[in-house]
Image (tube, rainbow, N blue to C red; front, side, top):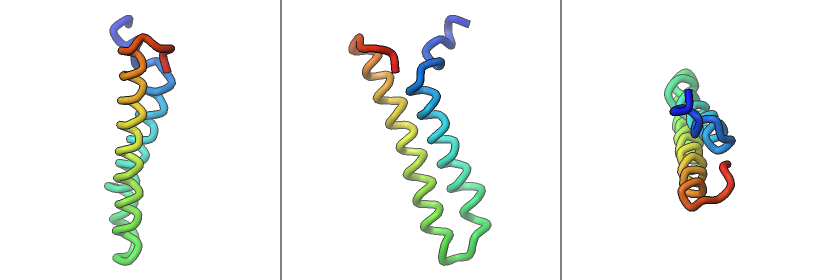
Length: 70
């Protein structure tokens, strides 16, 4: 399980949660709403997914630079 140790950092957990919530919102929740609300919900979901990826990237970058694992 040592190969999965980097996935046990707060940055990975938070980033994965944000990205998953964004994808669920954009792909599963948004299509069920009316045509006027659908684009806004899809946009919010896509932005959440991108924010999750940015959190993961920031955590990996900090880890590579030798900082505290986050």
